Length: 561
Image 1 (cartoon, rainbow, N blue to C red):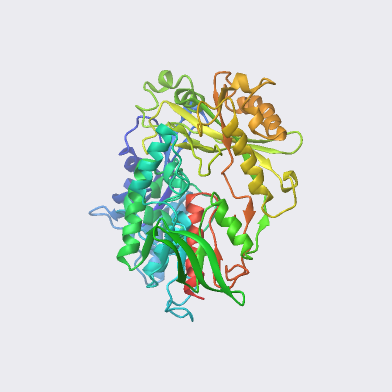
Image 2: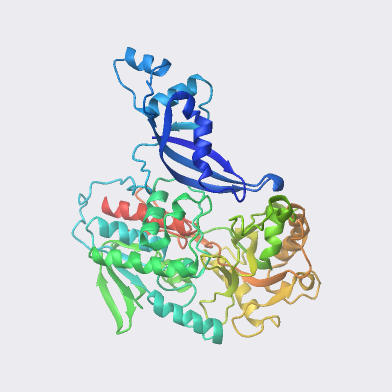
């Protein structure tokens, strides 16, 4: 099987044109071959040149010799000299390279399948069942991406994990979130941050990641099989959407349960039982009251919004260090404006159709710069066709985030505008000072006169925010306000009109990353024997996929312990 990258089609050109592009680029007719099968393994959009926008595909394909073709030639002679008979793809590739036409064409990786992507297991670092603790049931605190994929990995290798999730199952959680959106009734244990699937369940469901780890495909494959669809295996910018994610997390839970795992909702980790620096059990608050559970292996996947959990763990002797993070606002524009800015205002005139008619998705953006004092200002978690949502998990604190359905068909687009926060910006040198910094911003947002009601994000137009008397600006530290005000016109030079006066700003965005990091040894264990920590809450990941990969790695460490 052969792999070809960079096949470009014009907007409106049918997907079947890929076959013609393969035939032409490989000169199949001249060499006596016909295209047998082909499968798209990657797809993206190149919109750098508005007058030459292209859908770009990577394709795996097979060929066979045309009936009556001899297959003779230089490649055949080479093979004959080696007393071998090359298959059609190997012979064709040799011919292409000999003629100088083989650039960008290679043999497909071993295990590649034409009909759908194969399931690829992550490279495990242990011999299953070899560890001294092979008979005990590991405990996982948190059922977001990190905890969920750790539980899945452990369950698939016969270790029947016990998952403690402080929030509710996703259907009950969705009802609590709906009531919060409509009535402002916050449940501190079941909300946008806490519950089955973690914070990602009520987001855009982005699956992009910058990490290079073979486990990434294992995560995407598991999500696809759980209901996300094979499209996420091909897309250059895969996403799921909050509507589909709710089904996906339920299906992953069902898989874990079918393999002997246990998932306990409304069970909050409240303490560690330690003896001689090693874990012996955990304390848990349950619907029945306080309970203790014996445990020799605990995987912490609590997320970075569980401040009470981080405070408890720090008090229990778990080593933590303060780390930089970011704070800022969320900015909202009409999606039609973002489409015009990214695809070109004259798209219809050039291509004879609208971007949607051409099959283009709602456009996104990613912007960054350095301010004069060296601060980083960047956009984050951009939600095409999405909505700005309140995302509080703590009484008296207002937080915002963005959320999209899988279709991303809303009229508005929004993204976070974030500014670097340095450890030196904290009010003290205490380990948890970053959490206090975040809470201060959120409490100011809750009390802001720009908030229409409790827990609703305070909001202003961009023009109002640029004034000295801005109520929204009072929610952030002065350095963040200065960076955003100075950076908006510079962003507009990269994306024309980004600083339009009528753009809407919402506050505050404080939950993009953790303000602490939990150090780990080479065995991925913390300073407390038997206690492992991962995902975003431990400062070891950022985003759904990287947190899930970290969960798999931690499960591997536990399996090999």
